[in-house]
Length: 336
Image (cartoon, rainbow, N blue to C red; front, top):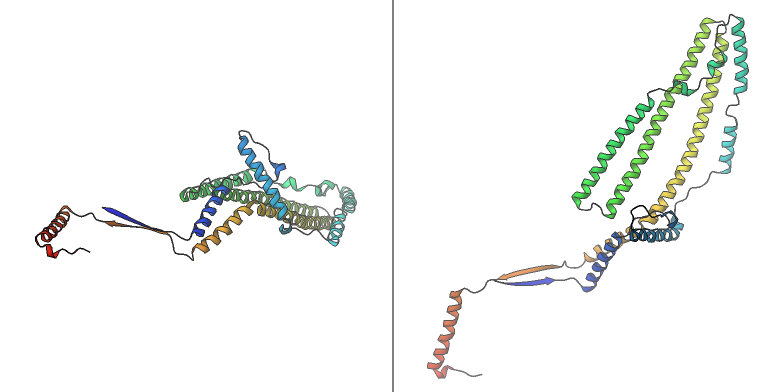
């Protein structure tokens, strides 16, 4: 059985563009992903000289791209002079109430001693928040972080399974996906740990304030200095709470400023790192749109059956009959 093959090819320039795109994709897949300059590259144990040279080349190209994209790099405005002045004024007043409270505590202790030695001592108000911290806090934090790490490992394995199912495990973009997932997971883990520490601190601070209140109530019930001691405790509580609130607000502002700078640096590094892939993606999208306006290429095959022995015999018989008839009737022969 004979087979006829007809191949429909797109225009030659379309073939050339597609071949060039495939070449660029193959070449880009061999380039290591580097997000630091040449100064941050050092040869690792077990790394071949060829692989190290490839990373050095990628780092040099990263520096060049980062310099070229300097005009597009995100930036963060510094604090205004008025903000700096306000912060200095706010922090200068922290703890200024301490000398006055010390004098009041001394006077209160002397008065309590004169009335029989019953009352709050000067050290009653000097207990720190750490004295009220839960002894099991570290165990709770360790258990929470361990559970977080277990869930992270499960999610990471799920991503690898999906990449394996798609046949892209080990590819450049697959590595980038895992790296982005790892970065986000590390950030979430740090936030979880910070939240647990902050929660423990808040509970200890509340317990400390409750202890101060309880001591003031006890002094009021045991001594005739209740009003004085309670007022002293309230003054310290209000002053301490004001300082904590003030410092917390200033710390949050400074942290937000620093985080914004870190985010801007990370975004600038990301732009320089993945610029080649983004350019290649845009080029691939343009090629895809261009190829969509032309007929699709394809191969068509048509099977032509071979003649059977009977058909061959009939054909031969017909030919011989014609020749025989021409010989018997010469007049029927016409020569052109």
